[in-house]
Length: 294
Image (cartoon, rainbow, N blue to C red; front, side, top):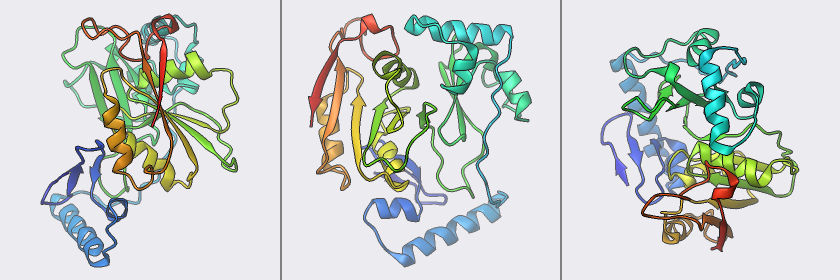
């Protein structure tokens, strides 16, 4: 694990890909229950904010407005989205169910957001609102930008607790269910493909569909454990180039997962030379599932 030695003490774990800012919650996840250390962290971060001029505010997460618009940018986004899956989702489906930003500049205007200038051409990208509304994850759809992805942080790093680029599909959850199924993939397009091809139309009130936006599966799982979902049926739709040993180590190193069953799916059509079949953001006829249980 890498930890910065100066405030705000950012960290990154190379075993499970979890990253963030060190605080009392992350110490508990590591099995460290040290009141003096927790107080020292809080004090150091407060001092850092004061000297760096960061305003200390009480942040309340708000729902971002995402109204469907009829524009050329929205038309391009909807066409791109549907071309990936051979689907026919509407603009309304994208904005409500999948939390897609189809026209970035209309979205910015609606939510009074001032995007950074000169770093990215947002009108050439499709965006996705993160689970906690702290980020918009943009993906270039023009093929002309140097950066394929751009993570737009809407709220900064401090004074607000932990934030994440984790993405979830909109869903109504019955918190009283005895067991919750957590379906995770690496990428956003992957989890949408998994949902569309294998779960759409099923009863979903005990299912969560999440993208880790990387390999930070542990961070996704911990997020729902902290929310009180202790009895999780975990299903991971893995990229084909990630060896099963990665998940075995993930399970071995987590006190929450050590005695749990985890179901892993791979796309058995994967061709390492061409990259065909690597993941799930594709039409269903390009996927053939292989199941592994650890």
